[in-house]
Length: 533
Image (cartoon, rainbow, N blue to C red; front, side, top):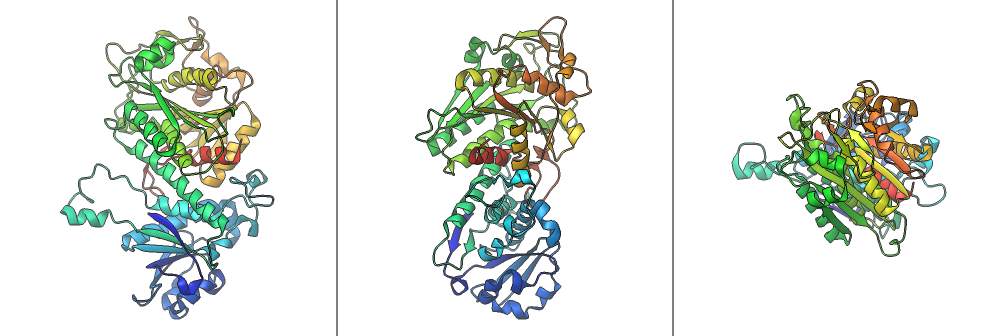
């Protein structure tokens, strides 16, 4: 869907439907007086009096079909006094719900009154917590912690997301006509301005929201894609496609190169896989940033995880196609960066393979040498994510000397047990980095909670026959995994590990996600790049 702007005030506005956001009990004349000028029939529409403005409530008001604005769609924001605590999330959800209703009604052109969004600016409400006041995308002193324009556009676009690449028609029956109907999308979304030209901040915010949504959508597509399609080679091709489209650099290393280099931990995972493994690398270095120490993001890319010889139970094993959500988030980040103007050097590194059992597969009890030189006793081949990541982390530090290094992975079921399916864990050797990740995540909808990296837990990873074991006891499993990775982080490197096993994939449906891959962490990474760490 195209994002555009209409200027010149109410007399110039044209759309099949205009969306307005209202608090409980709020009068339309107070929320959007200019919309009443564009659609004066609203003043006598009986249905307007029936709308309560409750959170998640959406209503459609109809005028004459030949009018410039024949419909208005009201989306509820709930109680005004409760709004500030979760304002960006509430606005995204309301925008997503409104656009989904437009799609259901097959409305082709949609608009939002920009002037009515201004009142939702965090500066005019109770402030978010002090940490979040370091604005995600700074615009100067006193700037609010979030942009309602950015969040409304992003939420609207994510509300329309669906994955139907492999559906031969739209709903499983009905032929070509049904398929066309089921795949209907509005043609454009306009932001309506009273000014004679589009204000720079409005234009920039809308484009930020559009870029963020595109990145999240790509990550969702990759996680939702079947494992016979989304292979390590496919992820490498995606990196090349993004790089070519936006003037970046991409490359990948294959099986022979990885073995020759000495990545014995990574190799232990791909030994049983017929699909060619890849270490995928993509770099964003706009002119003038080539000599910067980069921000380096490392993402686990297990495109299907059987558990290897330590075979997983069959229930829900099909969801293990999403075990590459860390790599998917990085590719989503670079798609968003390509649509943005961010003068920062950023590198994404994705160790990608399947974890399969066959006669060559790694056995429990095997010992392997990592790229760092440390030896690992493999107790459980289903703890494979840390094995591919540890070699990738070592390589990233040797190759790029990062300013900051963040890895992200669907790493442990223990993290899901600890924090549930809506929250990811952040482990960091730098409190400022951990706080920044949590603050940014709260604004953009990625919830993180800190867990410890206490050295006393390392006792759980000691091996009698190697430097380290790849698993410890069941208790504290997420902490054990993070401490394993910490052994491969050089002294002085600012590092964070994000265990996104819970929120990367969901069975829940919401107004901004139809279930499946969520694209979790794409926006957090993007705002770390935009706003600094």
